Length: 291
Image (cartoon, rainbow, N blue to C red):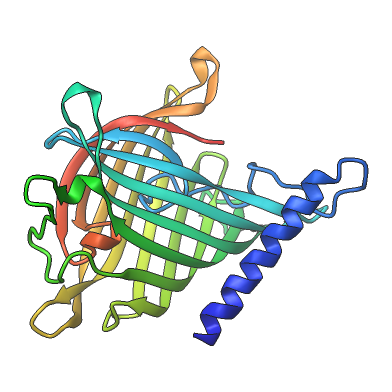
C-alpha cells in the first residue's frame, strides 16, 4: 500500500508541475512537452500508448485505442528524456444503428525515462542504441457491452472469476533497442510488483523487430512470453507465446505523414485485463495516428 501511495503521489506532483508550466506563458517554462519522443513508440506492441481504430475481421468487435507518450524533458544533447504515458485500449461491440457498446476497457498511466547513444557494431546495420524504462499502473473494467439488459446482470461467459471483479497491476518495464533510420530490433523485460488478483507470475518477456520496406510500407512483429492463469490453482503457471504481426503503410504520399493504415494478426493471451486469462486469435485492419 505504501508503494502505491508514493507512486500516486509522484504522478500527482508531476502532473501538477506540467499544468503550472503550461499555464504560465510569460515565464520561461521548466518543461518542454513534446510528442516527438526520444524513444519512438513500438509499432506492433498492442499495449503501446497510441491512437488507433482497428475493426476485427472475424467478429463484430472494434478496437479503439486513445493515448500517447509525451516527453516532458529532453536534454540539450537529445540523449536523455523523461516523460509520461497515458492510454486506454477498448474492446467495443459493433451493434445495429451505428452503436458501439464497450465490452472491456483498460486504463494506463505512468512515468518514463529514455536514452539513446550512437554505436558502431561492425557488420550489423544499426548505428544507435536506445532504451526506455517505465513505471506504470493499469486498471481494467467491464462496461455496458458486457451487461445483459434483459436479465439485468453481467454476462459471466467463460470467466473463472465472479463478474464484476477487480483487476489492476503496477509494474516496471524496460525495453532496449538497436536501430537505424530504417530498422529496429528490441528486447524487453517486465516486472509486476503488485497485482489484483494476486498469484500472477511477476515476470514477462518481450522481443520484436521493425523493418522499413519500399513505398512507405513497413513490417513489424512483437512477441511476448506471458503467464497463463490456471483456475484450478488460482495462480499462473507456465508461459504462452503471444504474437502481434503488423503490415502497414505510412500515408506520406498524400500529405498525411503521421497517419498509417495497418493490418494486424494477433495470437496469444488477451491484451485486456478483464480477459488476461484467455487466449485469443484475430485479425484487424484499420488506421493509426502517430502524434
